[in-house]
Amino acid sequence: MNTNEEKNHTRQPLQIRQLLIDLSQGFSRHWLGGDAFRTHLFNAQSFSFPLGEQYFIDSVKAAVPLLKDEQLKEEIRGFIGQEASHRHIHAKYNQHLNTQGLSYFIEPFVKWRIRSAARLSVKSNLAVTIAYEHFTAIFADGALSEPCWIGDAEEPLKTLWTWHSIEETEHKSVAFDAYHAIGGGYLRRIAWFLYVSMLFSFDTFVQTSHCLYRDGQLFKPRTWWQALKYCLRPRGLLWFSLPHYLAYFKPGFQPWERDNLHLTRQWLTEQVASYREIGKPAEA
Image 1 (cartoon, rainbow, N blue to C red):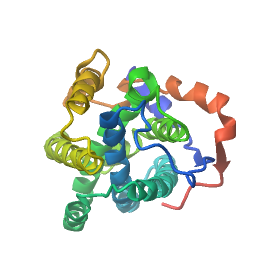
Image 2: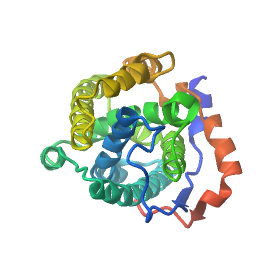
Image 3: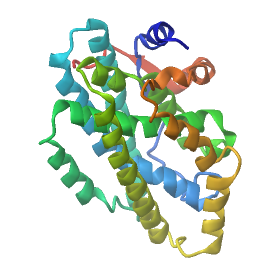
Image 4: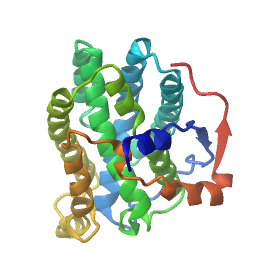
């Protein structure tokens, strides 16, 4: 896909949707195919979303006064609306995890990092945001394209993760485009990506391990067999993610090099009863 095609591809209105699922009845402890490891890996990501996605929203909002492109500003409004919807539904999801005896163990550390980020420049906060958005886009791509990721998930969480993955795919280039529009360069992008890679790996390992420990599954051989199978199998976590991770290091990288928007369309057409399209995007 050449540069002009990428621009045309990504300059699409972002629709904000309300997910129509009922979490009030909760869900199974091992809702992802009875697999404790995969369940708690995804639970660990859910715990991070309310704080993390607010940070992403704040980072792109700070860039808006520096932008001249009105269409990009409109995309940012859609990005903010979608991320706000994710924060809301994952807060409800996390409340049920709390009732299961699970907790966001690394929350104080994450809050401290976010407070510290207030001292960074707009460009650096955006560089951190686009690094996390790249990880999120990889997870979303795997969830949508590889049945071994969430194909055996129970409802309503299968619908929740599919919807979230679709919207992460739709807006995966917005923060990236804003970063470059305000003059963000390659070295800053890569330096923060290496930093975020360490943090993301550490946070995911510690929070997933904590969830497994609280669930009594951490020291069971079956749990680590599940982990090895998911991570090392063909099209599993490691082998699917690695080429997409490495692509970020290319000087000319652009998120829509991986053109996977087609993965979103069938579900959105077939599952119209699962969501409601809502008004104008939130003001950026």
